[in-house]
Image 1 (cartoon, each protein chain N blue to C red):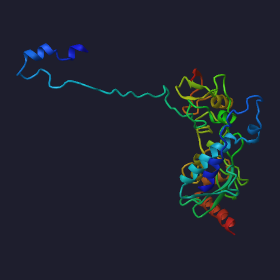
Image 2 (tube, each protein chain N blue to C red; image 1 turned 90 degrees about the vertical axis):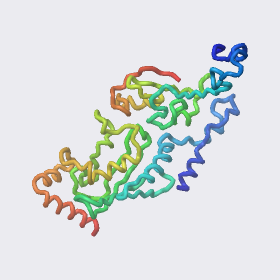
Image 3 (cartoon, rainbow over the protein chains, first blue to last red; image 1 turned 90 degrees about the horizontal axis):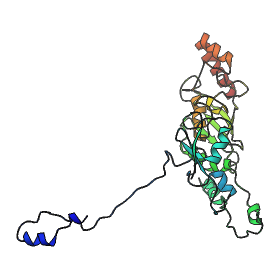
Image 4 (cartoon, rainbow over the protein chains, first blue to last red; image 1 turned 45 degrees about the vertical axis):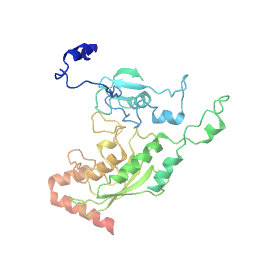
Length: 111
Length: 189
């Protein structure tokens, strides 16, 4: 970083000449964006954000030991994500992803 | 829709854990929990009404019961043009894991609806190995579109429920058309 700064000594020597650098960066603001690492952030079954508790659990207001709602997200091999509660109800009837019809197998679970 | 908005507001918010001594506080047990079906219906009925095809109209006998309604289809083209066909739609408790139950209340001559009112529409099929059957990703508006399309795009003579109707069509289309209109005329009388 210091290499980009103008040395006062240099400036002294170049007095009266045009400085090498026309601009110096005095201040800048970085803006970062983030999103959940999922293809779709809404559970297509209950239409609630996957990071929130599903419609069923919201009604029952189940809480885990941290006082948070204990409703985890499940990702399939097809990379579609749902609430684990919603998906486990559906696979009992039809073991396919309701979004892409692929055979459902769990890739990972968690929050 | 005023009633829908009011229903949304009435949706009980999880009670604050004021009394942690006994697991079920009186407050919690008193609030009758709204079922998942009813929560879904509040959104889906509104969405259905906003996206109703021009040939369809819905009627709720009891505006507080979103799980039962009548759908009227008045086709503006095809064999059934000029007819008015009523369907009863009943959304069961296990919605949206299970499709709504649909009956056709108007007697009609149609390859995919028999004279008893049973409807053969793939998206209303509970178990299906292909992508055409029921899935919890489907909504009420899809059901309405499906039933409406039975008179046009989804009309299927290849896999009929009313075999007699399909056979008649394959043999003699004029006779089929006449029979369709005969049923429509009977219904108007």
